[in-house]
Length: 419
Image (tube, helix red, strand yellow):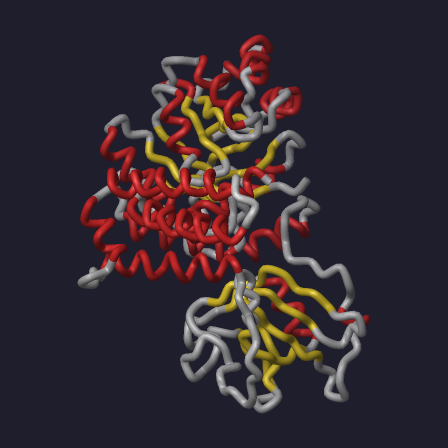
């Protein structure tokens, strides 16, 4: 199991856009997770904070830890309903300790991290057993002084440990060294390249998550110029964005930085995609074909892939035969986007706008009616009627989603968690 670098952001009194941008930068630079916290007891501040967390969860691929004031089980539920992978509960301000057990029963034993401020607590075997039995996943300790006794205590714990530290006094390698330390949470690497940090740690024999090829470049079949073509796809939509070439140096640079780096045949030099335009391509995966002569790279594309400003370099149609390229998810997304647009830009005579104008009660009434119609149609041996009723229901369901500021990404991520 590799050690994790988990940047933290104190979100109290911070502008939402700044938090979102900072979280995205950490994701791009190679963070393993991110810890967002705001322990304000003000309900309005907490609601605003959780809205920001929800937006960040949509934009980043790494797990999100969310730390907030927990008074009752409902607070845990609201925090995890943002899509966050873990909730961090500050034990010193938790009044009802039964919340831990209730939360673990509802969400599982891999969701709750407890932040402890009194290091004497971890030396109490009965107390730590109580946390373990409550379903706590890990504990978070702040500014640990790694004495021999502390290392021994951490090693003996039943629960893994995350150490939160600004790294002004401690060295990250020393903090990660104890076997039971899951990772280090820090703000030390803001606006810095985490990929370089990880390669430095790896050189010190600390197991961290870096890009590492399962095959040596020498095993690839290259063209006469010593290059291999790379087909580049959007990692979510599978849209082909561009084709370029790599030599061994470009391939190694891509692994080291996490940014797609190519060899320019015209300039006879390396080039990092996006270095001048800002339209970087962040690596998600790279595959080699069966003949080992072509790489398929799946990337997160920032901005447009093509120098013309087009999302993809493949936009000139040479020939097209009519065919059905209907994809269930893209159809649902397209219809939802139209519904969302109607909400933002009302159109006279639109039934969708009629529903939005009438409000949530009317939308819920229609959802209920359409659900009933599905039940009735399902009793009919003719499936054609059921097809229409399900379509009607899905439409009204999407109107409800738009009214409540949910989209298909929210639903799909929740289903993925349950998978």
